[in-house]
Image (cartoon, rainbow, N blue to C red; front, top):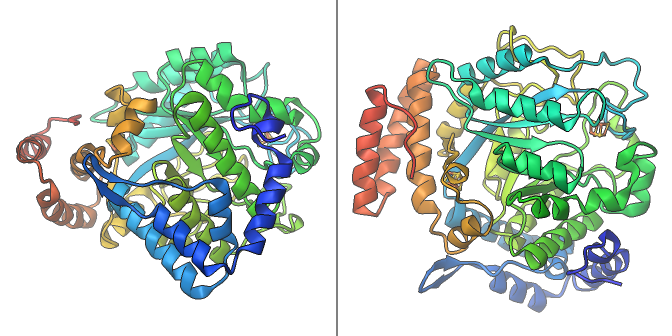
Length: 482
Ligand code: SF4
Ligand code: SF4
């Protein structure tokens, strides 16, 4: 029985409700009038408080996803671009993953870190190695990390994760600092989520992988992750533990994408109804090749067109949720989907344990890689590429540090007001990157972009402060924020 308010996984992600949704979507996929009405409902509207978007229910959004009328699909793409522009402008927030340990007691069949893979060496960073990795990441210009670790209560207990977070925040190397640590670790207890909250994490990210329970259990044949309910209810426990910002995601290619899409939106609706705040981010990874993993064995893989459509439909359905793609995707694909709604990308990523320190930008250790990195450009190259496309690469971490999390963040985001902070913050953090880490070509291109973009700050007081801060950054000061 479907119940969005229930705390039981099988009730808020009801299989029956998803099947009925898919049936409804299939029956209405050519219903022009209904689709036009849904698009009209989702369009940004000017209100007394600012620009607002209604978002869509999982049923409405599923109709859009099912629609295969080219002209209506074009309307969806333009609406996704319009919403992206209204809430995220032309900014793209940058981050990098940091792999702490690939010890894992689970048996996820799509991941090379699964316990039975004897081909992969097992590694766990010492605190000295964490320090070296963080210095290497700071030297690239990163300010925001997502830490990743397998699940292993003996090798990677929560104390180890907390110690690593502490180490990461403590390192101040030259002008560098990691200002936000997002955490991607296995589902855990309320007590452990409290500890993560107290350690000052940014977003807690946990991919559902698949919402289809039967497939989930087959894909996770053993280990603690086998428990579908425990995994699916993790975000409720995280919020109970005080974590305001949670990040959802499915691994596209594991089950039918339409099923996953409906499940993902039902999960978002559940969090909004129960906790008063929806997911902070949604990630859209696709299955990739890796040691002992052949993506061709997953017969639900999705092509680039479908991937772009999913991203556009998520953007329309949950306009206030940031959307993330990683270096799993190549440059061409990233170029295409950024305009449709992606707000955060990784750059210069290494997906192996200890993959940053001691390697040149061209060198890439493959021994402990979790997946093939398709976009192998350096951070400077990705930054330059974004600038050339007219985007502002942003290293902003202000909200979390100003206490703008959870519903406080969402209330500003929902009327488009957060932009008044995001835009100058993006310019100031980009200026820091240009001063400290950029190549001469990127610096020239970035300064030109900042000179154009600063004029878009409409509030005179903010403009005055931002202009002064940009000057101060050039004179060596750091870490300004709105
Ligand atoms: S996906 Fe995570 S839990 Fe599963 S095997 Fe890989 S590291 Fe372990
Ligand atoms: S101001 Fe807040 S929402 Fe905007 S980019 Fe910075 S951290 Fe993100």
